[in-house]
Length: 428
Ligand code: HEM
Image (cartoon, rainbow, N blue to C red; front, side, top):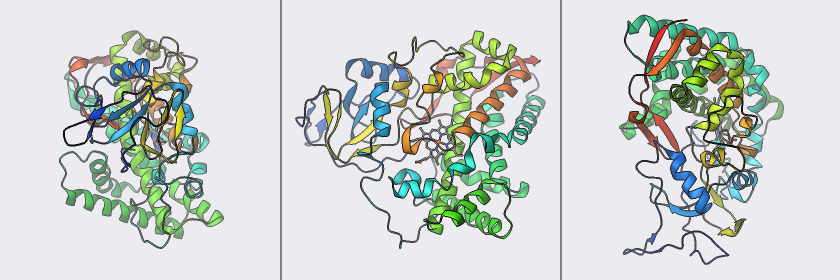
């Protein structure tokens, strides 16, 4: 969800009472604002965000993209922000039904209700926990095969867990849910992986990848129209035929978004969970000994760290008050999921990784409200299967490089771990 819509510059901070830093005009008339999300933020977001949350919980900043935005950091305010229809993802724009679009030109995160609702409802029944549980065996098989291959390839050396496991596992899980044919998977992986991480890619390569995803989705739709099955595409099409209310482009766009949004977030959540377990050997051992605790621990691991420290940027359609601060109409707003997940007002001793934490499921890593992640059941299932398989495979897992030397990339809206070398010890 790393789109950053253009945001009308906010009026001066005099609108309403505010506790945010007032800022001052820079040499080129650009208001000087704090820029806390630059270098250093990606490796340790919680330190920066805790400072902001405890000193200036609704802060006016400039993002690394150079745009002013308001940062909302307390759990109670972040929850309220997700539920507030005045914080818009479309910025008030209404889709034009006559414009023909390709798969990725329109996504759920560009729409507000009621347009958002009429499209989203086509997907949610296809992604329930029960529907996803039906895929469990196939997803478990994928995990076991990938770990067999990683073990066979490593000899006694380290395993680079992102390439050997997290990326192919998340992709294969999606292929199972979409029922992608075996012979089409390798060709589909390339554009999915490229669009997940466009670092160093030419505009042409991005364009070609979008075209390939578009073609894949249209072909899958045509195939499932002719021969419906029990897969995600067939279920979305069935809901569309039953309920109507969306154009073919919008359905294609919805499916493309499910494919792409479901990939890298889960890859990164697997990597981040393993990093947390590498840094907490006691928790790693406890979960290996009692795998029945893993499903709850998955929520704690999502609370602990998440690929998306912020919501997708919203735009305030009207003045919106959080406590003493009024965010003026027209401003860009980032709801900080990561700051909320570590807010001691919501989670006691937030700096302790507690696999049995009772409040763990109150994390906001999947968002909240109308845009709540529709893939959360699949993501939880994938994380449970992945961690169960990894812990069961090896007696213990050590980092192959010091954890504070891991290289974090991506951007402030979507953090990305490039590589995670681990030293597995023995087969259990
Ligand atoms: C651990 C993995 C995942 C995380 C942390 C995650 C996180 C999120 C968050 C925070 C949002 C809400 C964004 C906002 O309101 O600003 C969201 C929305 C979304 N996610 Fe996920 N997600 C994950 C996995 C998935 C998967 C597996 C799928 C698809 C199968 C998926 C598909 C989507 C879609 C389509 C949306 C947009 C929903 C809407 O706007 O109504 N996500 N996700």
